[in-house]
Amino acid sequence: MTSQENKVQSLSGTPTTSLPAVSVLIVDDEPGMRNFLVKALAKRFALVESADSIETAEEIRKRCHFDLLICDIKLPGRSGIEWHEAIRESERRSDIIFMTAYADLETAIEALRAGASDFILKPFRLEQMTTAIDRCLERRLLARENFVLRREVNSVFSSGSAMLGESPAIKDVDEIIRRVAPTPSAVLIEGESGTGKELAARALHQYSGRSGAFVPVNCGAIAAEILESELFGHTKGAFTGAQKARDGLFTFANGGTLFLDEIGEMPLGMQAKLLRVLELKAVRPVGGEQEVSVDVRIVAATNRNLEEEVKEGRFREDLYYRLNVLTLTLPPLRDRSEDISTLVHNFSRKLSQELGLPPVPFAHEDLQAMAKYSWPGNIRELKNFVERCILLGRLPIDSFPESHKVREISSPLPLQERGFPDDWPLDEVEKHHILQVLAAYQGNKSAAARQLGISRKTLDRKLQAWDETRPE
View 1 (cartoon, rainbow, N blue to C red):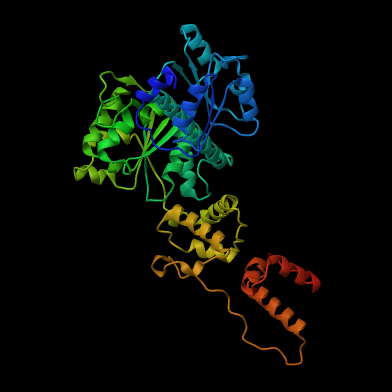
View 2 (view 1 turned 120 degrees about the vertical axis):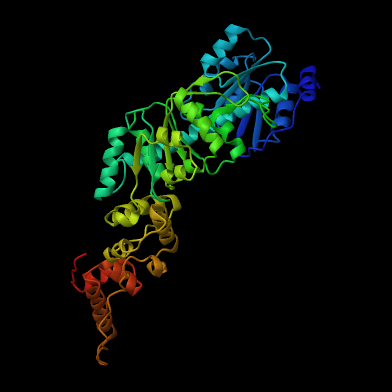
């Protein structure tokens, strides 16, 4: 074992949490260093491979993509900084940590300009390497999440509307969002659970033109004792378990929007600290001495009546007025039933793609039945219902609880109760029965096909054979 390995191993800490989905490629011309890093990192990652040169590394990369490359700068042949295939590749970009025992300031600057995610001097401790890896993976995860969120948001806003629907209530919400989005003012979004408060917050960010990220945080889902650290960050050693410094969500949202969901769940002590940050536009990490300026637009949301919470002493009055520059109230789904058809078809299209299953055809009377239901869980309940329909391949409308029906959902139209003459051939009985069911459903082929237990295509084929045409 080399002296470098002895130093690394003797000072190594406990391996951090396993991350099995990550692949790592180590490039170093020293066999001892390669073997040590492979052995140490194989405990954390599903795939760890090594190479002794850029040329060998490129051969390995042709058959497998690696999330992280750990590369020595001084190598036989091309140096790590000259590894243009990995550095400049845009479609399969990997994070790169450069290592070197011969570094000076100029080399470090050159490595960072080349696209290095981090830079480590040899000899190093394993703890330094794992810390650098964690930083890379955290940034990569955040970048992936932001990409997915932007794609989802862009798909929603491609229709040109901030909120999906044509009802007067949602049109008013859409107009307010577009008007206030470009301003830096705080917005308080109120509404029942499941009405789309986070979607409205994303719309405010989307139309704000802010270059930073949209960072959501559920104040009720984070333990009170760590909420301050999550929001403002902490320094190394600030509390037990703080083995390294960490930025808070305010820092991640710098230049963008911080969405404080369920703000009514925030403890009173934390409310006072949040108020100070909003007033000074600066955060002080837990354990830190200096404040760091931040440019963050605050959007808060709650399903509680904060005015009543203030009267009961459960929410600070000064923070309430600081957040309540503008209140955006989202209507419950029962008050915008005319939007159900649009929402159902939108959910059906997206969910069928995600699940890899064919969409369920929704007949006019199906949508009418949905419009008569009160949807106590609002849009979230509607989306879950559509997903259940796709999974079952049918519409379990009879599963709606009676207590939540606004009006009684009508059952399928009754068919005439009559038989057919005994001397009719079977084909003639089938034809008259199908036409009778089609008439009962007022020509709706999709609904009639479901009632008959056949596909829409089969029904169309039979009608064509009988030279029968019926309206949709």
